[in-house]
Length: 101
Image 1 (tube, rainbow, N blue to C red):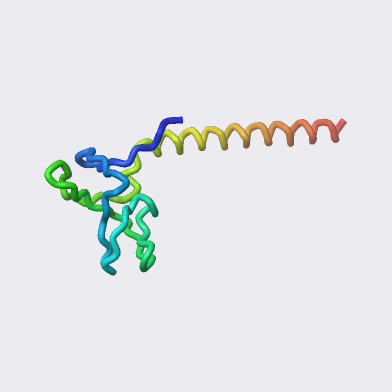
Image 2 (tube, rainbow, N blue to C red; image 1 turned 60 degrees about the vertical axis):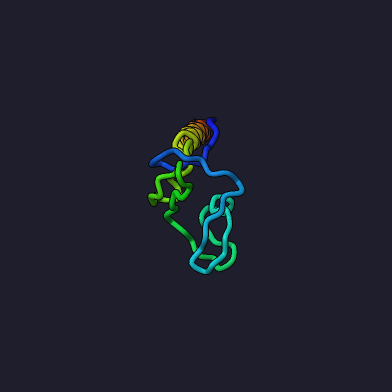
């Protein structure tokens, strides 16, 4: 599985762990340490702004779009689930076949 990287989906700026975003309640924290939820007031930020001047673009993007590599992980998990379903279905058919003999 690939590694997930956090970066702006528009300009590809990568925030550092000590970069901070500000909530409307005034609290400052790294939004990626809590998946966009303010640890002070609980507000969920579904969009995140790229703020790092002069490198960043200052544009807003959906928070989840910042996690580069999730698509590959999700696809792998879907494939694993589908395989487990197929194996379970085969097992059920084997058990039904044994009982009907």
